[in-house]
Length: 263
Ligand SMILES: NC(=O)c1ccc[n+]([C@@H]2O[C@H](COP(=O)([O-])OP(=O)(O)OC[C@H]3O[C@@H](n4cnc5c(N)ncnc54)[C@H](O)[C@@H]3O)[C@@H](O)[C@H]2O)c1
Image (cartoon, rainbow, N blue to C red; front, side):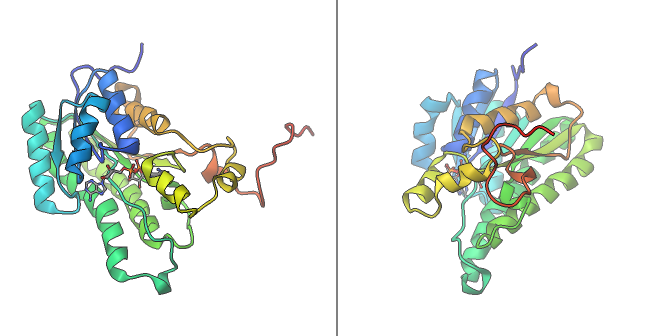
């Protein structure tokens, strides 16, 4: 039996690009009907063909009124929602706290954490009433461990993990499941722009990653699809690192690339 999302109605935020677009496409391939939500209306429109999504809604996930309108628009288009993936997000400035503008800190927290909260809140209302639904939030390895210069993003993504756990406990009795994935460096436009600006060196990341490479967006999409599907029917409140082993690597220096050690 393969993962089958036939008949499922899904909203994917941040669906115009990167992990969100790959997830929207895969959910469609697995049988779901998908609406994408994004702040970038032009990109969302052009992602329709690429993702196979049946519609799009436009707005800022950090804006409570916009979120209510986007969720209502998706519910109208699909006749309700069974699944939500919260992939809308922005990166931060990579500056230490004492040099950071509080306004920028707040915006990063607002989009990544408040946005996830608002979308869960708006979409969850009808799911609770119908006593079914599955949500996947997108955290990060930066939500699992501290990265210097990434206080806003780290706080937001750690908050997404805790929000996920709280919602799993609040909504479990209503038959709903809420999980999150914690991606490591994934080759999306967000990461490509960091590479272009030479913010980090991919070779350094590869050497620090047990699987020795960066991820592709489709690898995040597969984890999200699994958590949304009946294959994960007894999984809720979990954070699934999709990180090539990044978060479990605790030794000093680079990953040993030699042959496996024998005792
Ligand atoms: N790429 C990575 O390495 C990586 C690693 C860990 C976690 N993540 C997380 O994965 C998610 C997707 O990232 P990505 O790399 O695909 O980025 P991306 O920039 O390719 O896509 C993000 C999408 O979110 C949309 N968006 C941004 N702000 C929004 C807002 N306020 N309201 C609505 N939509 C908004 C953008 O327009 C864009 O289409 C983010 O939450 C990000 O933090 C990414």
